[in-house]
Length: 236
Image 1 (cartoon, rainbow, N blue to C red):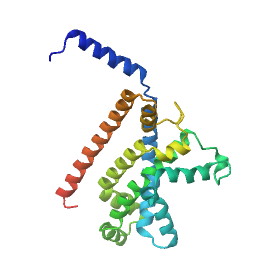
Image 2 (tube, rainbow, N blue to C red):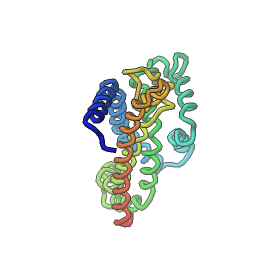
Image 3 (cartoon, rainbow, N blue to C red):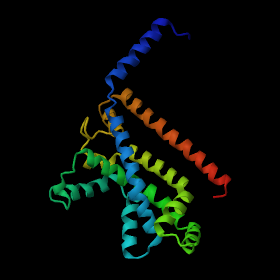
């Protein structure tokens, strides 16, 4: 059945009306949070991975459990415990972090942290140790060796882990819902916007936000596939 100019015009008008009713604030908030999380992963995550790859014992085991917990613990339950810690009667209650932008960053950071730390920890504990030992015998310091020997050897794994962490931070819901508060134009991420749209039976809006997330995740997936093929071609 051929489309008439009138039907095409009606479709375009409906599309324009839908776009005008949709707020891009959740997308920009999620993007901002994701970028901040990547920066935190690049420093905190990398240091944690280095520490865990070099140390064994009670402290290292405890840190490993805390870092890995988001992978196996239900997000909504983890959010509840964070709510207790960050609440008025919690250890960090005086910081007033609940239901704020900072709370959204904390939730997203925690959700994606194990996806960054565990892969990097694994490669840092492998054959790279032999290269580091050679560097030490040449009189190079630990800092020099880490920056100019270790990181160049793991940069593709680090890069892929950062993208995974970014994707996870963009898709976080459970933890953010409890400690972020799901406040429109303040702590409503794009994932929560989908949740809110479905609750309000605004399925076109939910589909639009879900499509944006889907495109981002597909792009990240294709990039990771490219990296994996490159690593396999080099026998890494």
